[in-house]
Image 1 (cartoon, rainbow, N blue to C red):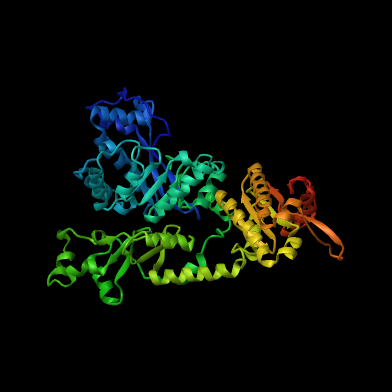
Image 2 (image 1 turned 135 degrees about the vertical axis):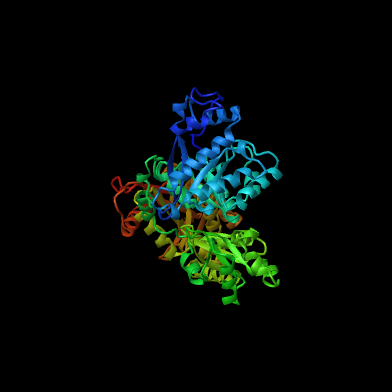
Length: 606
């Protein structure tokens, strides 16, 4: 996040207290505030973004105005270095700084392909006692980066010095996906524009879901910036963001005593939601290998010794000082030195200038709470990969080889087959009950639950046989699946001609519209299953349960909708079941074959 809010851009002007000759003295009045970036699943602090404070005392209306003024005066690069030094020195005073990362903004206008600034930044980090891998430089999209070749050269200079890179304000700037493609960042920070009111904006959900998916395929960690409400948090968590930053976590603080390694507020929110039902945590955990990683600061002698001691190993994971993976070191990259008479001595010589970070190869990563299909997709996106690194709360926990990944997919398929309805392949009763239980426990979220039941299905089955009856069931199952998938809902098949749908939303009218479309669409489409004569009559001639002649209308489906508002009192599955049972007759006798109720009111159907 840039040190100014979206849209805060002013025309450059020279501040009253900033001059070309005396700017260093003027900077003494500036300070840095730190804002936490925390893990969305646990609340553990991943790092802090340094945000400039005090520019108004130099006569500038905004931070953007200050930077523009420095650029107009030709001193922006020098000022940026001075601000980096200020941020590093203050970050070093944090008692837990060795376990977190520092995010520093870079103004794109100071970047050059020569690599002078990255070298100077590294020297400053060393003086402050901060490891290069603990520093992440944020490159914003708000200013153009020039030609792609120049941008790639700049990014490589920072990576060569051991720093990490983040794309800031993603989705609002000049280069968009090109910047993501060429920079090969470690972190992607989604601009507040996509986060604001995302729970109510279906289009933003689609955009964010695709951005997160692309980032994860590239092994990039995703930060949701500017999260201010619980609903924004839960939506970002559901979509798959890894980290979260914003006022909901903590306001930027200049007082470092207010900064802690853990956000209790986010941890509490995460606890209020059980692990996602789409998580394959246990299946993945059973299959991962857990080779001891090599610390990034290890000497090359230590790396050679690891390969010598374990002759079966062809690579080892490499982690930074916070236990977060940076890639793998492979034996084949070291063979030129291993088999050379003086190779090991040469590479171990510090004057040679090669260290472990020069031999680290990027490797796809996935969170242990991901779907098995997402892990497979991340692995497949990188050609020639040894496998995939598995992390939990961004920290290394193990490695999944290609063979182990196949076993994970197989276990997932077997488990899914056990829990699916054999006809429709939709989730069966066990999964439906789990979904309902989670929804009832999450009383802070709004949900809608829908029970669908066919009308006049038995006369149709008796006249046309089970084969055509199964086709009618499949027709509705496919329509239900499409309708719920479009809005991120849940579809299940209770059995026979009974179905279930669930939605996490406050938009009850949208749910009612979906159900109405399903009811009307099924009634219209299923008419084609009848013979012409019956269709023209509008009913089936048959016999009732006592054997007496009777007529039965054409088949339809009825829907009972139960809306559960946010902040409701606790409800049980039995209460919801009784309410649905009491409303079934209302739905079947209603002209539109629908009935709805909100238990929090008086449990009365409407």
